[in-house]
Length: 128
Image 1 (cartoon, one colour):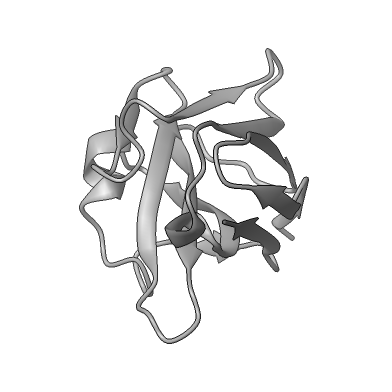
Image 2: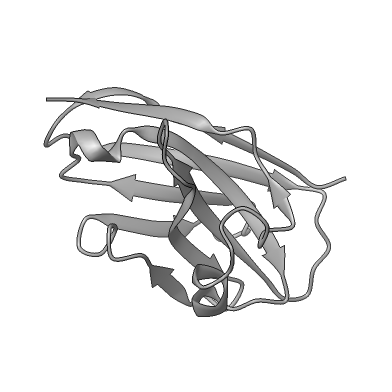
């Protein structure tokens, strides 16, 4: 059974930084992509950043220059370093995995239905 568990959310002041972590277990894909998506209250879910098993990355425009996705050497934990945070970044952040996709392909997939497995999410609140 594939499981994804996020951690690292919390309350941060605008301009600050947060590192989110996601530990993944139970998957057995030869090719796959891990990603972070987010959903703010009253807004649609959107993709943030993705990294595939070859190390390729893809970022939504909202994340470019501010967020960095990375993973540990074993590939079991994926991180999202978020800098220069704004109140608009406040959202529930979800970790997800999709089989057989590159990072660029994953970024283009439907953010609600395009992933195979999800974590429960971690809340990030940015105060002004």
